[in-house]
Image (cartoon, rainbow, N blue to C red; front, side):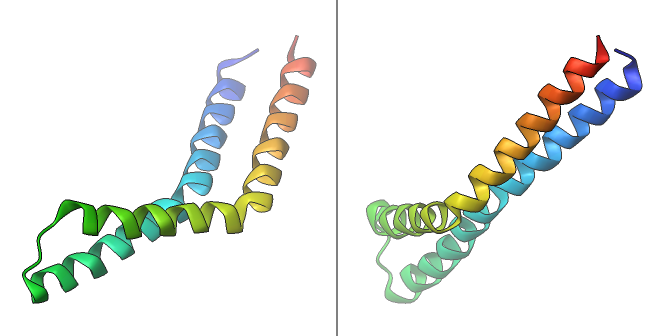
Length: 88
């Protein structure tokens, strides 16, 4: 296996990791900002109030995107295993 192939697979692995982790992370950030703004306006600074909605939204996003997440992950794994098999 040459270095360029290794670098390509590493780059693709990082890209897939960002693709899979991006939507839940973006949802958590947006809900955190909204809840933080509401907490600031109401002066209710309870950590649990910020954590529960964020957790529920991330769980909802993961459940909603689960078929796409699994398909993307399996496609990457299949391509990686196939590429490794042809490299030896």
